[in-house]
Amino acid sequence: MIEMTEGLRQFLIGVIILHSLCMLAGMIRAAIGPRFTDRVVAVNLIGTVAVLILCVLSYFLGAGYLVDVAILYALLNVAAVVVLCRIARVNHMEKARRKEEKP
Image (cartoon, rainbow, N blue to C red; front, side, top):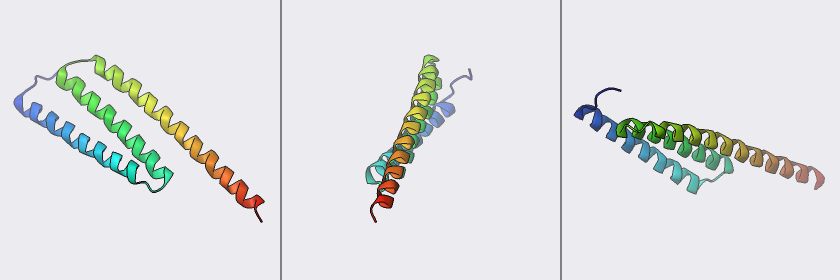
């Protein structure tokens, strides 16, 4: 591991702050919407940024186990997005089917 100099320390703090702002922007987009797909993309962004923050914190604190937590969280993030996309697809197909039956 590279020695933690003051410049590197300040850089990592800046990276964490920048990623936190990106996460805040994702939370705002998830709250505003307006479509379901906007919310799914925002949730994916929030999960990805959380993984990045965990990786930076792992290096910053010298705690290697946080990388394992980040990998697990990334896998959960992928699973959540797949489930949400499946729900969106099923809802879309159901609406299309109802529209065809409605003449």
